[in-house]
Length: 191
Image (cartoon, rainbow, N blue to C red; front, side, top):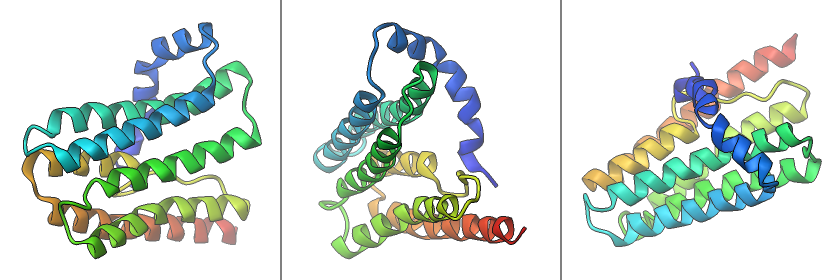
């Protein structure tokens, strides 16, 4: 049950030309991590300030860029031999900050408690995966509502105005994703 994460190899292949250009220009992977957070902030601003459905185009473009940067930063680090523990830390922090910043765009559209619940739930799958990796298991990604699905759901809200239902799906789906990953890790660590 990998969800849209199963498309990552296909997506990475589509970005290979961009990756090659970034390698030639000696762009830092950390710069791409930061660019992903900036794109997330732009998507949040568009979601919060633009009317439905006009928000859909900038939100969609900025979240697509956010996902591209999230894919490219690690790939660029590996391609150039610049993988570092600090870079890995920055990558994880950048992903979590980007997730939270995007969801902050809902603060003017839905009850604050619901935004907070969705934001907390959206971080749970990653915390479960990181805890599993810290315990010696392989890093587990994917699931019913991972990063890519959350971005798609935010786009749905931008296009339709369904902020409350989307936040509820993000909260419940993210919790389910965390539980799916935890179940997989539990079995993996028992071996």
